[in-house]
Amino acid sequence: MAWNEPGGGGKDPWGNRGDQGPPDLDEAFKKLQAQLSGIFGGGRGDGGGGGRGAQLTGGAIGMVAVVLLVVYGLFGLYQIDEQEQGVVFRFGAAQEGIVEPGLHWNPPVIDIVEKVNVTRVNSHSHKALMLTEDENIVDVSLTVQYVVNDPVAFLVNVKRQEGCLDHATESALRHVVGSSMLEDVITSGRAAIAAEVQQRLEDYLDTYGTGILVSKVN
Image (cartoon, rainbow, N blue to C red; front, side):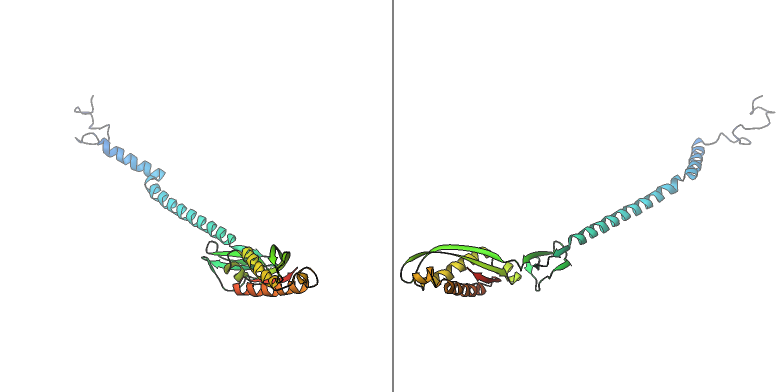
């Protein structure tokens, strides 16, 4: 006996009673989908995953920023040795004051620190043919020993320190030898000539503001 025939008991295999039709398949599918989403957390998972992703991205950016800051700070550390002094150039302009020996920090890129050895005795040799007061030609050779006593002036005032020293030595030597007799230059007067050359050379270097101090002329 069919279920819709009289006496079939009015039982609907779809669970409906009376003369209701078969259920809507689309509605059933939506309910099943909603139940599955509730079990696996589909709807809430999308929103939660987006939040965790944003937090992860923000944390990674913060960590990278901290690492870069630490690296930047480490690059700013430098050591000035006992025989050195430092001059700080900020955006190319020399700053007042001398950096003394020890461990120091300056912001990289913004500051550049130039180190100058202020204890080492440097040597500069010079040789030239010159005319004495009695019109004799003499071949003069000398050695200038010097130290740097003003690092700022040494780095800022003169572009080519060795060239400046060479020109000043030539000028001082020609002036002294040109006012001396040949015998004084090659014999007993050599020590006096060396002392006079040194004094005149120091005057020239001070006038130029080279930061060089002559310790001896041989």
